[in-house]
Length: 411
Ligand code: NIG
Ligand code: FE
Image (cartoon, rainbow, N blue to C red):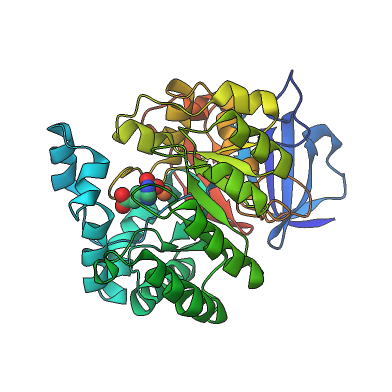
């Protein structure tokens, strides 16, 4: 058997066949082989086929090997920042008040509309690089700061472009229904007509959309409007997901579950009926502790109820300039534990296996499984729980994307 890459002397956290006793799917003293872009063998090192030969061999020195991390909810393509708003909120203004006064998301829309495609890419790459340096191999990126055809297209093209200039997989989400653009003030249904009749089908034809999202909230779009958008997405065969129950209970989780959506995200105000709907539909609950922290929300998502109902929970950064200027997935994992009460094992499943499921790509990545893409992270740590422990320190030793070693540090 020939492999292109063989990593030996590692503790594998496969995230497969988790049990109560071992939520990581651990293989101690393990090895993993890569052929081409895929995982071709893994198991205890002592079971390695004697016939194996590898073009390159790496001694993991007893560290942990995990699937590459997946950030399944970001708005990382944007221009400018919202530091002035941060200061206003520290003085007591609320996120909703700032939004109603024409700031908030609209401030970023103005800056993003101004930027050229090149400027937008240049502004966004440093954020992506931060995520990569902490073990990321797949990232979801939303539009939603353009809110017209040209500018939504520009954002999505930049997101796709990132895949060409960095070793990363980008999954795009169309968030044209993020907020009402100023030129449609007072006419939300007319804006939605435009989104449904023009933006969505055109950008879909240009292969720029992998899924469709909306902000279902008093300062966003109503459940009825969201439903109308989702029906249009469904007609095009596009999967849906939703910013749901972030600031109030709009019944968004049940709505997205109705469409067998990929995920319901935020969920601070999630109701028991919403939990049941998610469980029934198999829709992933995406937890965004960075936004909860940054908005200083006291309301928490109902974690123990979600756990009891068997709803898969993902964890993401929500990287955006208004509610979560966060570019570290391990820090999001830490916050998911300290603020929301996840276990470190749940936090890791939330940024690998369940994040892949939230993007509809669990058949390709998110676990260490023979046949899947070789997107891996090798960490200089002895126990996987350490991934949710550090506040800033990065024990990443090596990142593998599509079978290629793309990052080596001295850790
Ligand atoms: O996920 N809440 C809506 N969307 C983003 C915030 C976007 C912004 O404030 O720029 C969120 O929190
Ligand atoms: Fe978001």
